[in-house]
Image 1 (cartoon, rainbow, N blue to C red):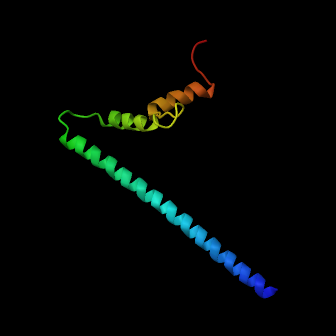
Image 2 (image 1 turned 45 degrees about the horizontal axis):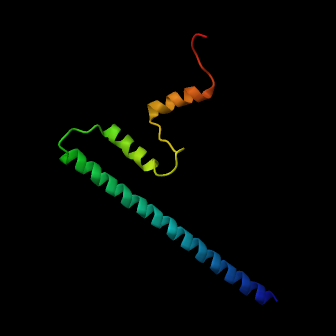
Image 3 (image 1 turned 45 degrees about the vertical axis):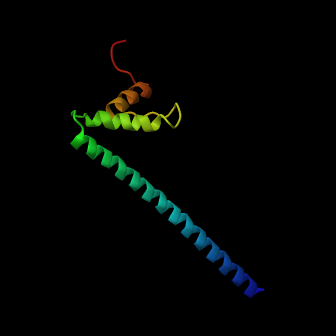
Length: 100
């Protein structure tokens, strides 16, 4: 009985290690995919900045790219720039200042 328990424990340990190894490799694949995507975006940025005939407003371009990506998720996902985020925090904190 003790031998069977040890054998079962060993098999469970091997299965658990294999499962976590597979899970870890999938996570690394996701990060590699993200890195490839970022490389493509940086290539487009570089091309636009160096080859585009008109001068570009990089912060505006970045904001438009992010908003375009988020439009595909759902109507409730929004990107706020830092200045807009401060205004949102003031409006939603419930602590208004001023006359009245």
